[in-house]
Length: 379
Image (cartoon, rainbow, N blue to C red; front, top):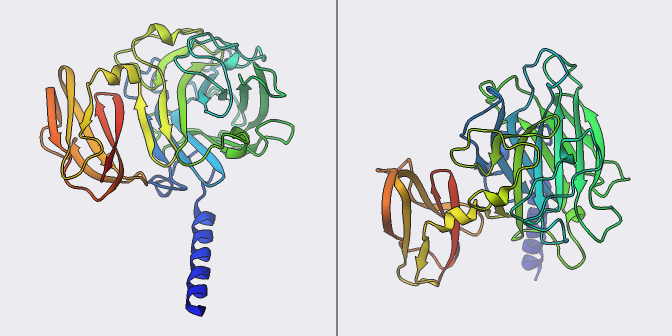
C-alpha cells in the first residue's frame, strides 16, 4: 500500500509538473521551443504562399495551440507599412473565430460589423461559417512611433450582456513584443495580446507577428466547455487600416492576385473560407468544399489488418502531402510528401495505410494549398 501511495503521489506530481510547464510566452513570437505537438505547443494550421499586394508585407502562417486553461493563436506576418506618412499607412491583422459554445453571426450572411468607426472590424464580410468573435491588431507605418500598435475585439454573439457588434478597444502597446492584458471590465478579461514587428516578410525569420492567449473559460459555457477535442473555426486576414482586405487570407484562396475589398462575400468564392482546428489534434480542413472534391476515402473504417487510402489529384500534377497522426497530434507515418520520392502526383491515387497499433488516427491530405482529413479507427 505504501508503494502504491508513493507511486500515486509521484504521478500526481508529474501531472502537475507537466501542466505547469505547458504554457506560452505571449510576446508576438512563436519560438522553436513553442512549436510541436500536444499541450503547450503551437501546431501549424495554415501557410500563405500567394501574392502579397502590399510589397513584402502581409501574412506568412497561422499557428494554434492550447494549454489546460488557454487557447493560443499566433498569426505570423509583417504588418508595418513602408509609407512615409501616417495617412493611409496603417495596416491590420484580423482573426475571426467560431466556437461551438455560443450562437454567433450565422453563416452566409454579412457580419454586423463593429461599433467603432475607426476599427478595421467595422466592415461586413459574408462568411462561409458562423462567427462568434473578431480580433485585430492595427500597426502604424514606419513613419510613426514604436508605440503605435492597438488591439481590439468585436463580439457577434447573441444572448450575452455584450450587444452583438460591440467593438471593444483593449489597449495600445509597442511594436517590440509588448504585452497587454484585457481588463476585467471586458468579456475577455485576462486575455493577453502582443505584436512583434519586423520590417518586412523577408526580415521575418523569427515567426513574429500577432499573438493572442484567450482563457478557455471566456469561450466556454456551462454546458459546452472548450477543451481538448473541441473543433474551432478560424479565418485570418491582412487589411489596410480602414479594413479593406488584401489578397492575404488564411486559408489561402488559390490563384488570388487582387484585393477583396471592404465587404468581401466569401460565399461567392468556390470552397469554404474557413480553417477547422481540433484542439489537441491540429488542423482538420481548409476550404473544405474544394478539399471534398479530392474524393478522399479511407476504407475499411474501422480497419483491422489493412486499409486503403484513396484520393484524386485534380487539374494535372500537383504537390501532395499525405500523413497519419495519432491522438496526440504526432505524425506517425508519412505516405506522400516532399521527403519522399515523387512529391508531385496526378489523377487517382491509392496507398496502403499499413499496420498500426489499435487506436484512433487522423489521416491528413494536402494537395497544393488545400488540406482535408479523415479519422480512422484501427482495431
